[in-house]
Length: 202
Length: 417
Image: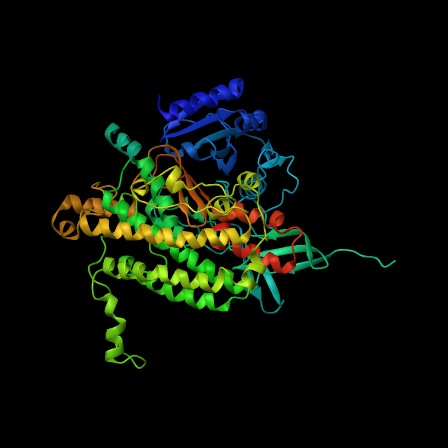
């Protein structure tokens, strides 16, 4: 049995009912869990002797609101996804845990008690994607400017932002003004496969 | 009785020891740090958001600017993720070239680290020594890519071009007459590989010089030994990788544990520390100098003996030969397509990590099947390390904070992204 299959089996066994599905793609295992169970699922993955994911490598939020614009199907899952990349130093393997969530703000349990490394990663996800983590002791913005408004990595946030700043000679301080940059797209986003299919269909 | 209370102190963002733009607000009890609140993000440029608006290849240049002292390693993680999703393996010669330049980059990075770390705790000379060696390695960067720092040399499917057969030469000027210039050009008379070989012959001697200066130096030890101790369990839980994890005594190196490119065919050792303090991390990195040098030597020997392609034969990834573009319509079209629209990756998601000089550097790409990433997440090692700055500096003196920032080897280009 290949190592990936074995990993998949161990993860499924460890999670039991918590596991909503697994996927093997690009030599990586992805498991999906429900947002309400995220903390117990990750704790189980950390502590179970067959999985032993002792390290949280990365935590990332994805906004799927424009995901299917270039695909010929509808998005049938919630808008946001939290993606946890775990690694086991002891058993030398990796897994990706994914959970889809909705709401404004989307809420999720903090995993800071499971791995202290989650602290800043969760602050980052809150800052750039506006995900609120309940149980996080210090959920402040981290990457953006002091007093920043909005969550810049959401798909409805424009690339050029809303405000620009400059030093005002008369007021002797930095002032914020609406952006003057015209948004422009140099290269359009295309899905060549689907474009080809459409050409053939015409 | 007099009222005693803590006071708050601000450090940075414009402080020479802040390694760029770090700001720390500390709660101090006398000269002892009670709590350090780290403010980052002053160099945030939104690389991940920018990459979403560009075809895959156009973001390679942004990767250089993340950790701007280990440029090619950043590119490596990014192009490896693309290759994984596209399903292409670079030719073996390209893999050796990448490994060689990864190790050159590791030396470049550690040289800057030892220079800056030395400067922070008062060893002024190190900085000047380190920059002397960096000069040679940056010349190697320049010879191969045309740029001394931001190379954009790695491409999905290989590297942009093969190693050059000759090195650029110095020309006589007011400071150096003809005879002196000939001496300066001596190791530049052959190919890039000859130039690098002369460097690898000299370099272990230089590392000995650094060690003579620092390893048993009383002041150096006073500043580093028992400063910022991290236990192995804590290091894993805090998400430490790279020399920060090895310094705590865990033998963990992606080049060995999860080998990529040709690392499984090369001989090298993984140094580990025992106490997990700043001094151990210093020793680990010093040994990595020697091991990287060893890997570069092996790569030079292999590359000399095995000429070949450096780019996968895939007309969607690799630009066609220039002469073909002028004669062949198909080549002209694929050239135009590659440099405007780029190529599409299959729908899905992938994460790929490499052993970056600072730790595990990974990129996570979510693709919606188009020519641009739907979401790109960069896992920077420094981000996890600096998150532990508070924990590592508690109970230490103010001056130790500077040593801890130094030992974490922070570069804000990658922390803030």
